Length: 187
Image (tube, rainbow, N blue to C red; front, side, top):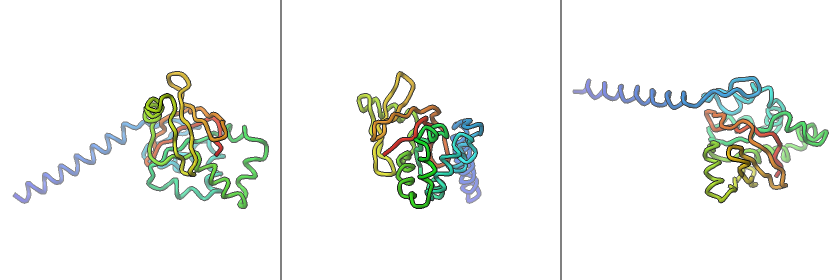
């Protein structure tokens, strides 16, 4: 009888592993910045491979946020591209990554992060439930307003009135989800 229970336990464990693997396999590997973003890797492990996010990665390192974004999360990250950072006034990024500006840089970067995993479907539902707008509380303590532009495009409005568009949604990570955005959001 003990053998039967042990066998049953082994089958249950193997079955659970299969279910988890099938779930992980359902998340698609998305190409961002010419590199595959693997759903089995964390936010930092994937972001460092995107040639479109080298400025963001450098800023995350300068702010000391690498360890946090490698943590269990889950996190929803609205990841500005290099072009988004380049659109800031000349010298802004160079100034922000200086050690004396770490606090300001950290506030800006964490303004792009929401606790929890919010897919585009979750965002669209929150927008619909909110009558056309959803207020998102950022890790920095600020708020972003999510809204729809047409039937498919999600936009984010920052506290200064700037609008950023999600250009690539649902880049699934082991510890959250990344949505690529075309503007840097400002608290």
